[in-house]
Structures are given as C-alpha cells and as structure tokens.
Length: 185
Image (cartoon, rainbow, N blue to C red):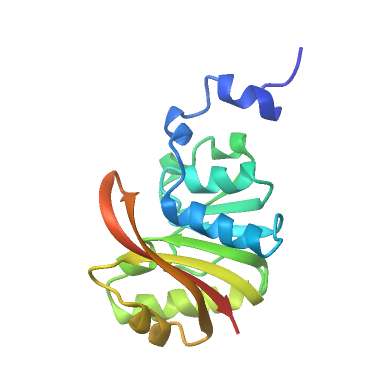
C-alpha cells in the first residue's frame, strides 16, 4: 500500500483541504511566469500572509521549497501535506529565519494591511534581512491605494523590474491589484 503523502495521492487524501484546489492568484502566476522567463525553476520561497495557501501550494507543485507564514493555525493546518512548510506567526513579529535564507518572497496584500508606519518599517527590515541579495519579491497591493512610484520609494532597498495591473481574487473578493516584481539590491 502506498503512502497518502506521495504527490499523486495527495488530492485523494481526505485530510487535504478542498479550498487548496482553488486556482492561484493572478499575481502568483505573473511571478512564476517572470521567474521562468529568467530560467528560474527552483529555489526557496516565503509566502507571507499565505491565507488559504493556494499560492504556496502552486509554487510547491512547481518545484520550489515553500515556507508559508500566517498568524492563523487553522489556515496552516495540513498545508504540509502539499509539500509546504508552515510557520505560524505574525509578519509584524521577528521572522524566525536566518539572514539571507530566501531566494524569493511572495506578498499578496500582506504588506498593505500593515496600517501603521512602524509595522511597515519592521516588515521591510525583516524582508531585507531574510531575502538574499539579488532575490526577487512579488508585491501585490490594491491599485486604488498604491502607485508604482509610491512603492518604489517605500522599498528603497529594492528595484522594480516589472509591473502589471490586474483583476484578482483577494480574500474572496474581486479586487484591482498592482503586481510588482522587485529585486533586492
């Protein structure tokens, strides 16, 4: 008898949450397409504020080592069955990773939800600490609240390489998003 943890059996495992079968966000697809255009098919990625985990699973299935961070234990339950390493803590607490640990970071509407400047500054300092030099960050923010130039000024340790505006499904609602790919200087 085969283990239910083999990749081809995971979808049939009753413990696996059905909501993870939801398609990845437009931002995640945009990021993966960008990485593949650069010949990148592997690496260590952090998904910040991963929500239901659909994007983390998408990257794990594409061959990346994925670490998903969310403050909700319920959200992270059983995500490891999809090859994703769960980490339950807030992005406004110290990130429990070594310096220069990640090649890539995925943030879909997480940074923008940090309402005060102190939380945003802490988040940015931690991002700069854990992301390798030359590492890529996909940042998705609401296009009605952020502009490319504003984000560029806030993320001064990064350079913007690509951007798109797209309709995306965020927190169960259709939203207009500004998706930016940044590289750590």
